[in-house]
Image 1 (cartoon, rainbow, N blue to C red):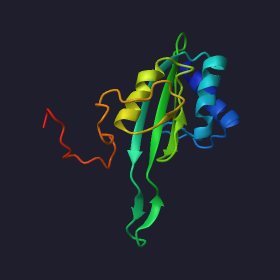
Image 2: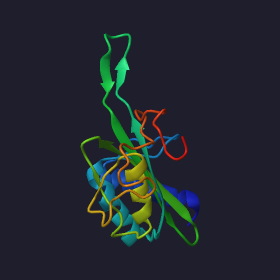
Image 3: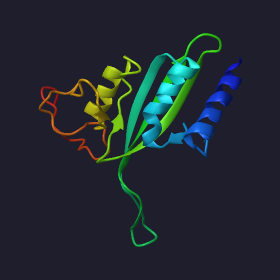
Length: 165
């Protein structure tokens, strides 16, 4: 099997079993948060993906339409991108995104991939995304008493960071 064939299998899985209709050329596919854990489980158990490569969270502020009385176009939210790798021939990376509202969380992938442990903690610490049933979801880089999440778009850049400034 070639990498292209592996990618086609991944796309078919997303469309047929997880209801994904749009596969963008310039971004990872967006899946419903309720399918996040199940997609990772299927990829691990049925397709042989074994390596947890990354999780990256992005914070998006509320978007308003300045031309239409500042009507809200999109509410503040997170997007969490995850990538897991299948090793061997052909090595292939399966990546997807999940939209997470500020008051929601997504399931941890730690029960499937031990490598999710510290990476999910990092995203919690720096961006604020919560991972349900994570065994040790606490700050990883910032002190425990730190207020806020420094990689959020609404985090004040002038926040004092002793002893550095």
